[in-house]
Length: 320
Image (cartoon, rainbow, N blue to C red; front, side):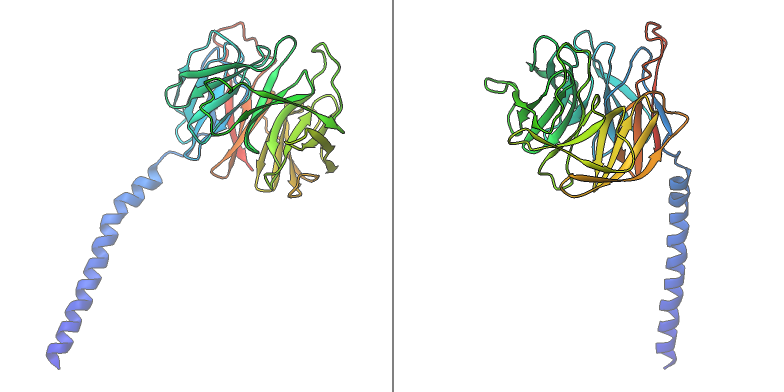
């Protein structure tokens, strides 16, 4: 019996020592983890680079494009470190999103172009002339069978099908004319129509904010028929970028210096106002993205003196 008790005592002592050893070995790791610097609350973009759109990968790599020369800047949300991966000198870069093949799909503003860029090395894989004449290809969402782009000066969306290389014959964007309850935009480029674009929570339709009408529309991607989304409070006036996260809609309101938050019906036909996010760091915010329980908002700083090459801007992190 004493032998059995002695063995039990040995096992117990060994377990205690083992536990102490584990705690001792784990302490430096825990201390190292706690010593990691917190994610930055604001990330500066390069001097002379006026950002507008934002795309964020699942791993926290973010991308934004320049309204000055179309350059693409890639940065890490965890550290704030980044570099320009595509040098500009051509069309501007407005809204942009990543697709499942590691490509950036970039709206080219008044050039009427759509660019397809390798998100890894920044190579321009294809350039499509979606529109000619007075046009402003403004924002993009990936879903409903491909990538959808808004044109703020025309009552159309441009569509690139998913699954193609997007570089060869037959890869040109297809125009979808908007109808139904959509408020037509007068020609000439003096009035802004379609701006930010997203998917409905059920993934079956698109949501587009209309600047002049100060309204949100649900778009049938098969027909282009638009239905005005009923807002229960809040505002989409000065609406720019849209973010749908689950059933939550974030509307970035540039000249209002705010983000209005709504709860959407699954089909996107109704939106109930929840709250308004304001922040003294907002400086003509244009677009946003969600990552790690935070909202990352891009400041375009339209009022800044961008003729000064030292002028820069920020992407700010705020609670959702």
